[in-house]
Image 1: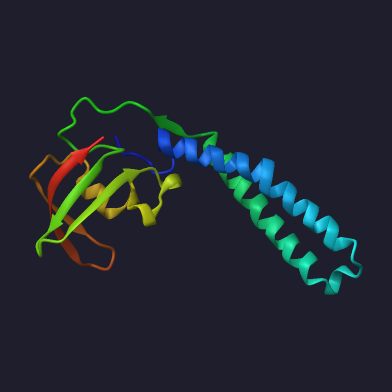
Image 2: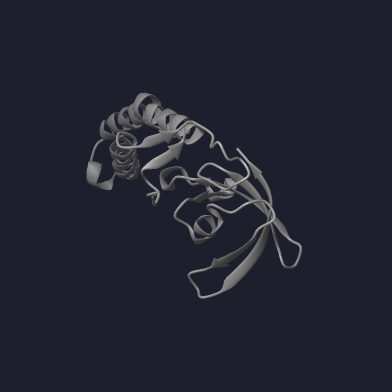
Length: 159
């Protein structure tokens, strides 16, 4: 069974994105609407930089709200940890070591919740696809989109 990256999400990711949606609706959007109203009261809207900026910000916020609402309603939250914790599955945090001895840690998450700055990678990424089903000590070969290949050794798995 192949995981579709946008259909699954970790419990933490669901909570974070639900909180973001709530913040956008209850805090950010009303602030922007108030700022637009204030800027509109200042006169000619066609030359009012604050009004133009805030309208653009409102469009971007509404777009983000629609995106989150559309995807969060069809999402499947993965709450349970796998029975086999010595294998890599969705939600795993893995420690890898490359041939040069450099170590990197990744967490495999759904496409909707990816945060690269936190080393969270999509289950549909080349690295995650190569890792799924692997066990501790396994060598993992990752074929990158630019035709390079990288080899890792799987040092640790956490859930």
